[in-house]
Image (cartoon, rainbow, N blue to C red):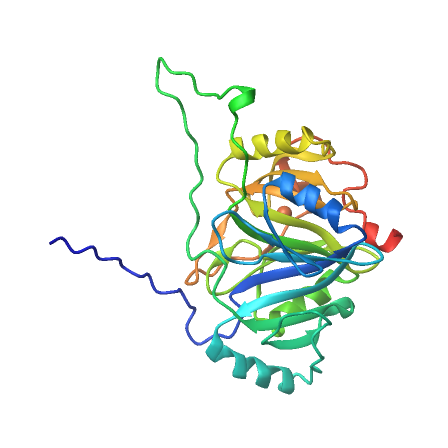
Amino acid sequence: MTQIRTRIQPVPRRPGELGVHSLDHVNFSVPDLEQACGFYGCFGLDLKQSGDRLDLHTHGHSHRWGSVVEGPRKKLQFISFGAFEDDLPRFRERLETLRIERIDSPPGAQSNGLWLRGPDGLPIEIRVAEKSSPNEKLTHESVSSPPGAAGAPSCSTKPFVRPRRLAHVLIFTRDVPAAIKFYSEVLGLRLSDRSGDMIGFMHAIHGSDHHVIAFVKADGPGLHHLSWDVPSINHIGLGAMQMADKGFSAGWGLGRHVLGSNYFHYVRDPWGSYSEYSSDLDYIPFDHDWKAADHPPEDSFYVWGPIPPPDFAFNHELAS
Ligand SMILES: [Fe+2]
């Protein structure tokens, strides 16, 4: 009888250092949940209605990457980060040492964690969770057809794109250096790259993408985009067409970023923020010390791609 042995890979962990391991999930409100169903369903996410909450999942993945609730306007509600269970007491001590006040969990939040206020007053949770950041760089496909065979599908048979996971969130903040300092000292994230005081990208120390969260300067807090990983540039193009076919043609792409290196196409959502199809984002292993750098603005945004929309970095949450 043949025995099938499966090797369970240990979860990577940077020894002796305290830091969250993942961006766990992001919660925000919108004025019309039906509109959110239409947008994210078309984007290729798996949606689960849970009471008055719409949960965002990816195909074949049990993790809840985000939740949308109905509210008077679109508004970033809170961000949860995942931590190892035995690190939670150390985070509790750290909050006490830094004299950071703990707050009650927001109404409706499912919580086992520590709640605090981040920069701009944004509620943040450090929760015990399975590591949802990838433990290694995910595959990036580039498939070429063999000689004598056609490579492209027809329009009518093209596949429906379903992102693999949430890659990162980019949020607005009044003070990018203050946000970098806070997320470093309190959550244990590390700076990957920045461009002056305008934008900063941070990774998790136990192995994560180049950024799990990024900050861009604005007059107040808000959600700029959620980024969803797909396996290839072709999937980005197919996703963009999938959205355009349903009327979601506004956005920015196809292009390639400098910081993080990912290929992208951003689709503008009904509230003026974006969902990004992203592929081949740089990965920082748990045992690698990424050299953070400050890049000049003219050499940090994108290597190639169309000119971005003039209001690409406008925080519509402040206007609504
Ligand atoms: Fe992004």
